Length: 190
Image (cartoon, rainbow, N blue to C red; front, side, top):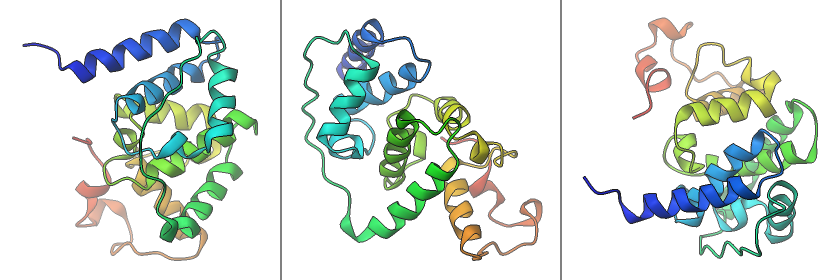
């Protein structure tokens, strides 16, 4: 069975990025996000939700040997009607950074932008599998990631954390095991 052209193009961009990387472990995840985004995959908006100057700073910082590649991807901007929600989610992530560095702040904005998509968060980010997102969360937002000790789907988990921060408990059951929505929150993401 032939490989789709977009998959070949995504892999080519990924290999180019990996060859240009500085050597930070986060760069493999960023390379997957960027390569998918460059081919129109995922749900990330213009400049991954960072704005052009921060986007270019991130690319230069993590892929310094990248030959003047411009990532010109036409995507829609974030929905202004969801800015309050995005601010709350960003604050949650920023409060739970592993090291408190600027790369984690950029990743927080990327995760927030991806959370506005309609699919599973790993898919909206353009990651290749759910394990990529789990690694991103554990490496960069460890205090938050360790709370997801039962492997709840990441987008549901993040919004559940927001609700609990506000004192809103919308679950219909006192424990997840007896909830009729258990399969919607836990289990494989197909």
